[in-house]
Length: 565
Image 1 (cartoon, rainbow, N blue to C red):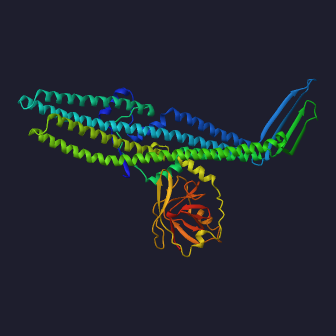
Image 2: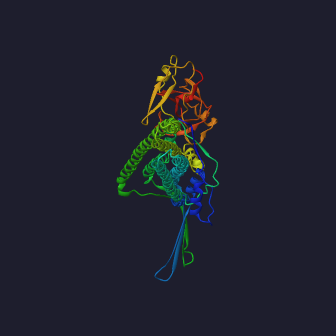
Image 3: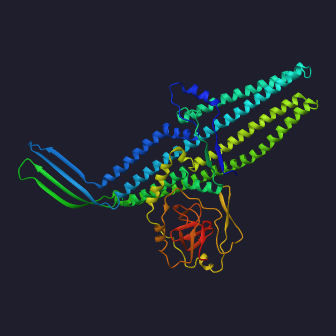
């Protein structure tokens, strides 16, 4: 499978259509994939609506944080005898058992979920705009084929016309050539109509007109290997990120319901004043306030309801992962099929072109009819149209894959949003719990005699199968790097400090041979805790299938080099 696809320029014929549609007073930006997707994410109203929701979520954080500050209150009243009285008070929470901090964390999680929701809108717009842009390119290439077909039919018509004048061809042959020439021109007109529709579709997404007279340079897009694409989709697909954040929100709701009935410790200070001198008084003290609704019977129900929401969110994440895997597998299958068909079509076009040249020579000697010559020209044109369509389908599929895994975020100018999400995730993971490890693990028992095999990761219908290869002596070579999520890479010092926590189970030392994900469980379903840089020293304390266990989690074995085996 080729590693790159190229997004070419539009043809000049699009210029007249766009300038006519734009009008004389409109400033038209340059054309190309990058300007198109940037215009879409900047101008589309759905983006503006999500940005407004994001701003609202940001203010909710400020509202939650205000619970840490003192509360002021006051009142003034007039008594029946006409005297006035009033009171002023201030209270400051001292200890709320998490009833202030958890709502702040919930508001921050809601804000992150809103950012991911904005990312969903971005990715959808990027994908649709890239596909619309690719359709324009395909129609432009088809127009070139149609123009070449008209030129060829014009030459054939002139040729048969000369032969007819010389009484070497019949009037029927000349009329047939003229008919095929008119059909070629009608085909071109049909393509122009399709082109106008495609331009309107792109304009509806970008809300602007693109000047194809001044296109940007070609944009080269790298299409990773299938196993890498699946890993990136699991780590960076916006729908999966959103459902993961919904799980965190549900967990925080459980935490809040557990402490909702706990008391709050406050310091209160107040002053009461009356019209009569000497009756004013002030007070200050430490208070404990709390309430239990329904004698506490509803607490357990609310906690259980919140836990059910956590489970529902986890099941929703599984469903989303299945949908993403299904679509990725479908796109990869299409990409592979289109690449294979393209090679066959190239071979077929070469053969048909040679056949057409042979038919022309045989027509001169009377061995082939004029109809056979025209039919072969038609077949050649149809083959060329088919090749253009296949190439365009291949580019469109590649663009859709790149959009889904975030490879077009930088070109669209929204890479900063995904970087911010990664930073938020890294800040949230302050400590990592060490999974329990038995001193008699399978890895340690067989350490003295076992050679660690390299593995070949094979993907079939979204399910990973591991095929053992012959063992390699002494070291393990990285067969395929385990792809990284766009999280903040763990520093050497932080990781070195962490891996010294469990000296009792130290058995094998290793070093990462690539940037690799650290997961809380073995397998691609495990949550990515953080990302380790290449060259990080590791202490391996266990093994689970094709995954090594270190004190902080699990890493893919093929991206680790054993240094003291």
